[in-house]
Image (tube, rainbow, N blue to C red; front, side, top):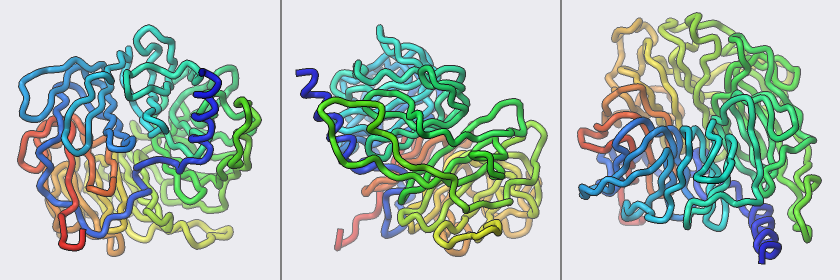
Length: 439
């Protein structure tokens, strides 16, 4: 039975698309409603760092200990991870894995599974160091997946068939040295020895990948580094990747996952400038447009003025070859001194979240400059003009939004505060797409 189950998982991971729903893969025909759905459950403490959608199940990860369903007084213990039904908001009773440290990243698996990344060392009684593949049915880790991430934290995950890409500030995956970026066999958890592209030369004391996004055979990588695969790439670069061959052997082997990868010629010098000294690397979030034609990037860094990329959202075209020249941003939208951590590009809008007070604020310096518009904690930018859209649900600012997930029905949001769209939605919320006669 075990061999048969492993065979089916290998087949599903090799032949399935890269994710059932993920930022950068879902196109919306319009802007989501500013009125949050009333069914989402509440996270009663801590912060939400990551959201994944597996079929009709929403998986939420972060640093928290208690949750409850909307309209219910019953408090349920959940150690840094829980799941609920997207349509009803019902919390899955059987999915209650006990992770000993926070979850920082999630990615959809197949056949009712989800990948979780962070700096945890155990899931219940099982040793799951930094990365685990969990069953949604009962929260148990799949024993075949034996990834052991050491020396740091996993902060980003993206899957392409049998390949699972992980970013963070770790130093090893299993016995292999891997600095901040690795490609992992999505079935066995073994690091791919053929994938050796490494970010390096950080401005701070440690190489860090803060965010990754995968679309149309390209992996975008953002973080504290100035080289990628030995080539100059200040805080942002693209890697050309290909899916593994769509074949399924009788038994998994490390050789199955080997496939070409190379640093793309695309590059930008936009993030070569410096922000505040305590933010040596300031790229925090990135997301491909649904068609892969552009990349949206958000940053922290402190007030920097209109000539710097600190505390900004920006669009970069990725479709046209850059040759040897650096790509300049198509547009830049400044907050005027407040951090942005999360971004989702849906074609109809570029949603940005953090603890910002304003958008359209290039001349602000922790103040509202000429033309600034109030967008507390969450906002939407026109993908072509780069100007803030009228959409303005508001939220309590707190630390900020750390997770967006666009799906065919709307936009999921994860943060550390309890007010969203002028309503109580503790740390998790969802803005639905308006229903039209043609829907």
